[in-house]
Length: 402
Image 1 (cartoon, rainbow, N blue to C red):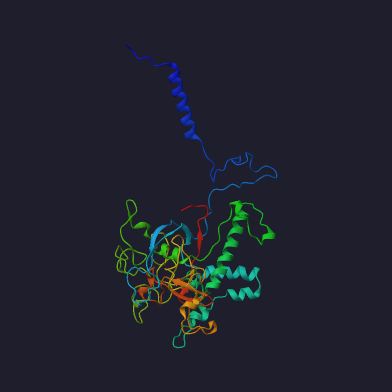
Image 2: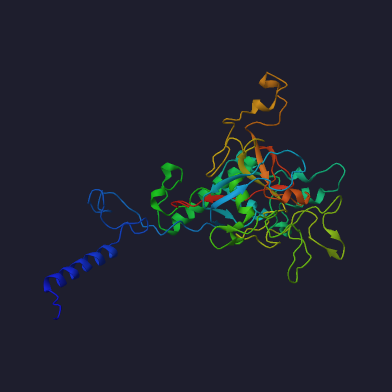
């Protein structure tokens, strides 16, 4: 006897299928496609005197910035601690995705900054923005040519700027934010409001977040570049002592085999090798694109110049910390007075540690290889500068949960 399929059941099946297909094809509003109607009030967006929802296609690209995908990592000096300082003990943290300059800020970039500052700012601020070129001067060395020529001579255009304090680097970041965002606004035919000092509303979706110095955690994470040492699902094959594979300082591959992978001091009195075979090719700083980039595409994350980071220095930063986007802004839970036990009077503190002392990292042309490991760290007063110290900018990835 044949089984008869009743039309009512068949129609019910078709109707159910239509509902499932309709549910699957329903689109929900997103940041990029918010729709025309509010899902809260039912009122249309962008009507006269109504709530305005600007077009948004994602965070604009910032000049010279490279995307750094965030994730979990272990910060700290994981191998040797030849100074026995134990001021960067290993700890596991998660760092959110962000952007970082592909290169160190170069002399030509700073000269461009000075050009606009001189044109648009007071004489006093222009004077405060000048790098300290006397950082090259030495009583027992003939470094006079660097004092006179390093910043402004065209041959040094794309060498990293030095003689810049942490405070000056922060001023540069603020200027760069305002300048780049004004340019983006002009390209989008957006009126720049005078009443906000040229600050463009975030709601427009046109502007970039602030340029700033990277946090110590961001800098160290970016220098490690562990993104290209992963295998299968969250299996990290190994960690790196330097921003490149292996524990060696020389290139093991191709035509550059045997050449150093960074600009650093090879040993006592040896900055570059011998004539006819100058190995790292630089007795002082070098071209900001000189050596192979790391896995994120960042140049000179080891050697060339040390780099300022945002954090206040504390030897025990690893003890009181967050494990998501850690940063130290001040002496919270770790006051400077804890580091000077010889005096009860704050005016007589002997310690070098206070809230105006900042971390720098990365090693330089004048440092031995030890300082090129991402986990090593040093500190300096934020109003001071060195011939071995520069910086690069960073930026958050706005509107992202990773």
